[in-house]
Length: 339
Image 1: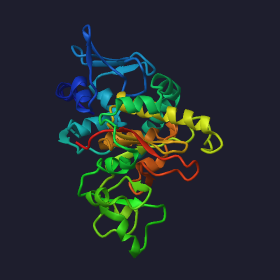
Image 2: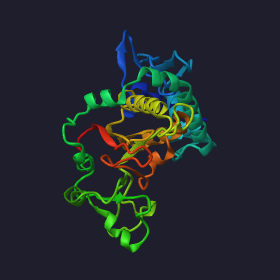
Image 3: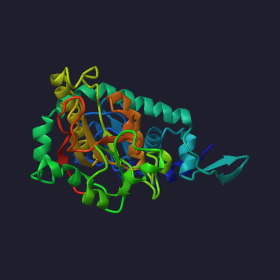
Image 4: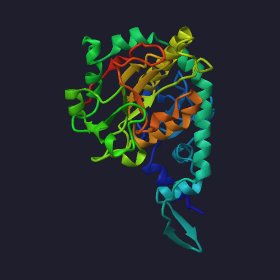
């Protein structure tokens, strides 16, 4: 068991406000309380309240749950009461002697349960997300683009490549330009692709090791710098880009709404949006911190994000090349700087 004075010490050393601030959750003043969007479910109107004087929190929205700082850590990290105390270095009594127990990671079932709850909340909130952030992807992203897109279409690929550092080794080519010695020419520094032109109509989202000949996970030079959001079936099915252009246009608009939600509400940094020329948009986001990335992976299937989004070896369409089904060129709709 843990003595009361140890519990008081733990609570004093780790307040609700400090816990939330450390996780990037911004609280704003609302009378004597602080308020923020609830970290446990998706919502439009903030319903998560903290009373800093009493060091207590309460979700007045979907959760209808609250507690102290220890309870907050239990929910955020999927820990038991005892695991929170160990994590914070609380001492426990065993046979009259007091000693420290080392912290340990949350159990796998607890983490899986949290991911399941997060995915369920995302699926439930998806219609509201798409309605609230609806857009005309061509007009709205073009107007919002930090870099003015006033260059000729034939320069799209060169401008897009600048989202990578000049010395980064990047793959460009066609789908099967990988795996053989002769494919080494498809792995070059970005500055060379810009100078001589890309090696094909597609590009991988990751950076590769020097000497690579295979577009594979084992050849990636570190974690992928980008997550690429593509949603082929937000209209309820995968429309044919040649036979169902209207449904494709709706699918692109819905994908754009999801990307704007990730940018404006979740806080991810949008780097580029490319119209594939077919049924989808490719929305390039800077890879977020590990904790946020895990949450994005947890909700991906629930919000119809293609799981290739997290694969740095997967290839995507470079702007400026025609789509084989429609003949329409892929083009940049939105572009931000590297820095």
